[in-house]
Amino acid sequence: MNQIINSSDRPRYINPYFGGVLLGLLLLLTFYITGRGLGASGAIKSAVVTTVDKVAPQHAESNTYMKSFISDDHSPMYNWLVFESFGVFIGGLLSGALFGRIKKLRIEKSPKISNKTRLIAAGIGGVLFGIGSQFGRGCSSGAALAGTASLSFGGLVVMLFMFGTGYAVAYFFRKLWI
Amino acid sequence: MGPLIPQGIIPMGWDFVIALLIGIAFGFILEASGFSSSRNITGVFYGYNFVVLRVFFTAVVVAMIGLQYFDYFGWLDLNQIYVLPTFLSPMIVGAVIMGVGFIIGGFCPGTSYTAIAIGKIDAMVFTGGLFLGIFLFSEFFPFFEQFYYSDNMGNITIGEFLGISNLMFTMIFTAIAVIAFYVTWLIEKRVRKNHEEYKF
Picture: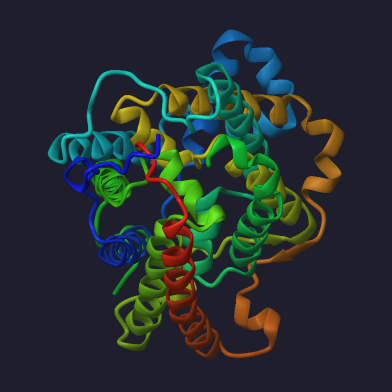
């Protein structure tokens, strides 16, 4: 465990500032073309609404939140963020293939915890992120990144409180990571 | 003059094709920067890897300055850009919940999609959790509907809230970002000295 991994075994990532410039330019281009920024959690919301609408249409119609995303002309999946998020998956696949990071199914975790602990934590984290992104009107992409870049006050608030909370509680969950 | 699709310069029919292409570029950049690894991401909270801060702040600064220049050159009408509305208290609560989810789960939604692409089971579980979380939110929505719509400040910009021009804020934010890059570089050097390499 104390063994330092040979630097040639380390995954090759692009320079973070270069990645940041690329991401910033992409965000700028997205605003220029579509008038809106990037997003991610919205696609899952569409998937939730579509699933409930298929399984229990009356239930979906009676829910004031889900109802607002249901339209008679098309499925909730017929949505910009759904196509974009599908693209995010493909983009990850392309980059993973290019840099040789696509490997067999695996779990990434701290050596101090078991696979089970990691998966439970990942599930709980996902649930919390799902709930939080609805109150926050977006997640790290739509609210914190695109919101702040387009000078939305709410976007800045989400960014500050999300990362601020992360730092505030990091100590209690350190075993999960270090 | 942009934005191109809302102005009808690019027909609406191209909307989803463009969405897919933009998504591919987005996913590629996230994965190539190292965001398909939860231990890379959470490094920002423990000081051993500040890649999140570097990529995120650089991207915000580039896009923020770019938008102002595009507006100045008359290429883009900033009044037609979507400014996320502010519902102050619910957004603070949402961000706090997301912050806890971030530390426990190690991903945010966009990064989890790219991690699934390279075969991370924990990312699949995280995305399943997202689905469940949004479902629970929708189911219990009537209980907090009033809170959800409270504190509506409309499409207020940062400059409007602070009482300074948005250009001034852009300059301040850029300065903060540059300082943060330097300070976190110092912290990272110190932490890594006492830290074992971690496997990805």
